Image 1: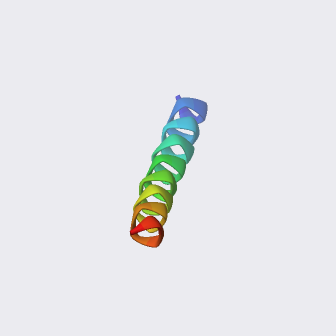
Image 2: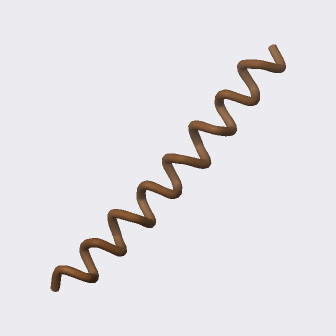
Length: 30
């Protein structure tokens, strides 16, 4: 169960980073 918790946390962390990164690219393009 602990491994699933850690994987979920990592997935959430990277998905949040990806959203911020996409937003940054969008702002940079226009």
